[in-house]
Amino acid sequence: MDFSLIIGIVLGFGALLFGFSHEGGSLESLQAISSFIIVFGGTIGAVIASFPLHDVLQAIRGVIASFKVPHSGTTEQIINKISTISSAYRKDGVVALDAALQDSDLNKEEYLLLKEGLILIQEMLDPEDIQYVLDADIRSYKQKKMTEIRVFESAGGFSPTMGVIGTVMSLVVVLGNGFGDPAELATSISTAFIATLYGVGFANVIYLPIANKLKGVMKRSLVQKELIVDGVCLISKGSLPRTIENELSLYHQAFPDGQKRYRKGIEN
Image (tube, rainbow, N blue to C red):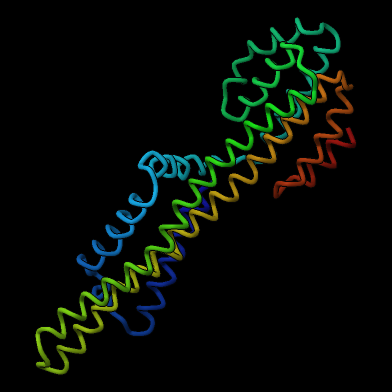
């Protein structure tokens, strides 16, 4: 599990609140329900108006799934499984694939593409045809993930604008009530700018970081999927398990702790 997103958001807001308090501001003065409703509600409404509801819900599910990001440990497991299947395939041919497809691990998210690839090998397709079909799956996956990313990037764009709208609305109300006590007027004007603060804060501490998080998860998932495509094609060509391990070990380098695993893979 990866909780860096939550940790980052908490630290971001914590730093902002600490800085505001350190400058002499009162945290209670930041509580403005009307500003929150205008900024948050307006942003959500604009996003829903911009995307099909299915895409918005899918984006939320994508954020939840991002807590389980691909890492090089999982990549190592995939390489080992591909190597094992390759060894059995060289020995027993297509019959070995029947046994491999019974493995419950292939029903897990990270192995579904491998399962599809083994089925294509069973159907006696050429490696080039197998790669074409699996690459199409990868393109579909990337398109879906890019939609999730655009949802939060759009929220990051709408939020500051909604903040400005909220501030303007508050100023209209304040100035419309006339120029009374200067101190009270100054307080009302400062309160009006809380909406702008909300809009910019939500965009840069929540929405845009989430979009960047989803980009990182997508890139690493694409690395694993490309690894699987190469592995399946090597299996279909009858490559030696050791050759497969060496070639696929290159993919370890796409992950933070992958360099060590890469060296381990080519030295074994």
